[in-house]
Length: 270
Image (cartoon, rainbow, N blue to C red; front, side, top):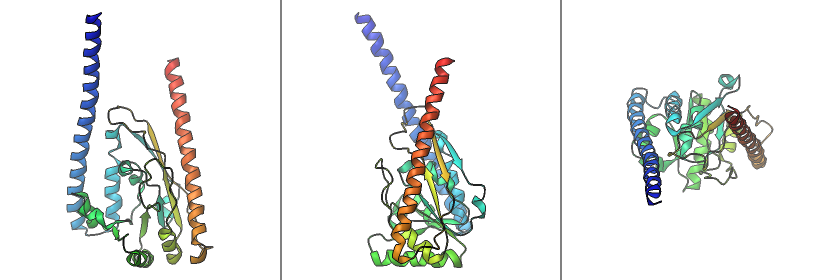
């Protein structure tokens, strides 16, 4: 009996050590890849300084790292995605894994709006600035309001689209949080549509000690016309977009769950 217990203990230790090594190896490779992307991306962006198409290029570089996380990511774009023109894209902001999932959805000539503290993130902060993104001072409401007005002006004068996370923070498993109205004020002022982009739930779905972390679906939805809205009913626009995105996220989660069940049944029959 003691010999059996010792064998079980030995194999258990090897099993756990293997998983720990998997996580450590993944973290090491991911960190190296991210640093390389930031360095090369910064050098490239200084050559094409703050060119708005820089953002999409390097967002997709990060998006291609998803296999290192054991993920299969499906990117769905509508047929007319490249013909929408100037707009404001809004995405659901879940966690740090957004960098390798929904980031791939960033279109050409699209810059994002992020908190000004991002500039201090090692390697990434300089890349974020050099690619042409826009910093927002959340602590100063007057400056934040002016930033939204500036966005509306730049969208039309510089032929830009803007990417924003209207929740204002990562949801971290709390579902789609209520939207702040800044993105919607900017869309109304600029006279451009809102384009929702959704990503299926990743909270508690990714374990770096697991080889296969399943499938994630990112989908760009049809543009939402803002011409019927004004500053007076901007909250209605925000709530409508929230409902559209929340419903679609639930549908994507259900689709992934159904496919997982079907795959499990197929494996049992094989």
